[in-house]
Length: 148
Image 1 (cartoon, one colour):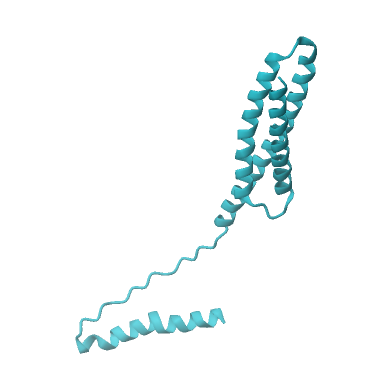
Image 2: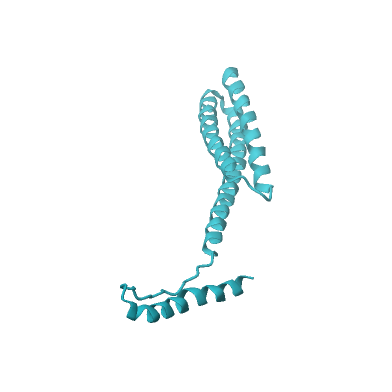
């Protein structure tokens, strides 16, 4: 019995450290998403181990101390669940904000340039050059004026 309680004490200490790390990460303005996900996953694993230990301890308790022990473990589990919900909500906000940031990118549609092909006949050179100059050279000059 004492052996199980000492194991639970060590696990609760580890969970408390993760608890404070997650709380601090949630409160910061520049949240490290990967670190938050890792800590949340570790917390989930440790909580499962802790609940198994709590069940083993509860089986060995007498009826007098069972109620107090059960209530304490439920309070601890409730605090952890609230923190998990907060962390998951923060992760959802982060993924939602990154999706909205990518949605805000501007898309520019450029006109399709249709330039007739020059077949090498000198009779058609002037008409080809005029259409090429209007479509490419004059347009590039106008675009340079827009950017400067």
